Length: 409
Image (cartoon, rainbow, N blue to C red):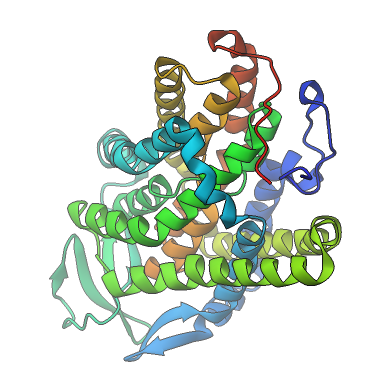
């Protein structure tokens, strides 16, 4: 089978390198998007609002931003089309690592993210963010409350003729952190596992299983934790978000993959089709980030340390989940090639889904959307650090250094 990481050279196990310029310098691109978005917000303040105003409306309220939905579909579709879901049925022979990643991702990670984010954003950094600072977010889909009414921690206000909720700014950042915490990585983890000399076939299985799990658990956990945090619980919008940003690209990816391979063959699919998708995905991601930062430029310029306050709990969460997964993998006596990707799939976040969901639920200009983008900002440097840690600790595991023979066809 060809490498599961299309675009990467077929390398020997001891010489795996990140060859994509976009992947290697993702943090640089995000920083440029921050600068570009802030500049766009200054030079053309109405552009992003106009684009976000091109929405599907329900009862007079904007629910789905059409330009953002298009961008985010092209961010998600290439992820889904790479996955061979037929490999899921072979997961039984790798039961321990699959169970480990499911347990950490869905039974532990969402709740530790909630606790860490609340501690830092709601307590330790609250005065630094601004005790009285507020943010305007969308009203939950289907909810029609009078102006002045309270909903959770929010107050219903009229903004530019549209009812919105005014909530404390730290709670908006908190909501974004929650959405990141319930989104296990199903994209870049293929890169991290590859660089750490992990079992690529197993990584693909875990990606497929977590993608399917998100269809059910992302909305349930998201609604529950947002509700506990006294934030809007837009159940209808959550379900719509999963349908648009997970189910739709998943189905489209499955069907198109099956048809293309049947008509053109696997080699053409890997070497031609996926290569065409790569620049489209990059453009969609960067365009979305520019729009996000065009809205939040004033917040960042007014408090340039905002990104740092958000990044600290996200970093601590990443480290906690990685060491927890890695430690349990050692306790379960997994091979290194299985332990490394099992630990990193939970440590890394599926920022594409988090960005999509925060944008739909709270709005493109919300602090929640900004918080999810910070997840993108720290993704590469932190995960590369964890890759190096994995490589230096291979001797902790049985069978370390041996190339995995398990290949999922």
